[in-house]
Length: 75
Image (cartoon, rainbow, N blue to C red; front, top):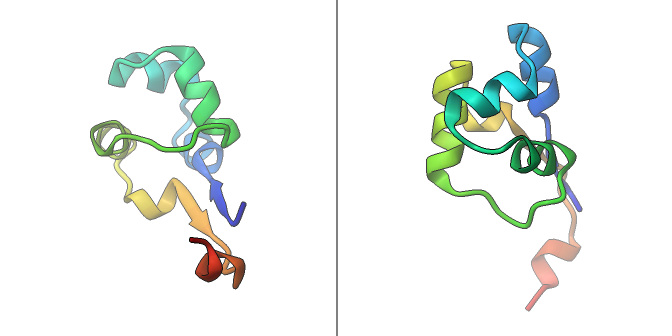
C-alpha cells in the first residue's frame, strides 16, 4: 500500500512512546499499535486531530504517500 504511517519518527523526535501517546489521547495501546503498524483501514479525524495536538504536528507528518498508478484505476 502506498500510504505509510510515519508516526514512529514523530514519536522519536518528541521523545514520546506510543503507550504515552495512547494514554494522552484516550485510545487503547492495541489501537495505537495497529495504527503504528499500518494495519488499520482508516482512522477517525478526531483521533488524528488528537494525535496532532498531543505531538504538535500536522497530519502529513504522521502519514506519507508514495504515488502509484494503480490507485487511479481502482473502482
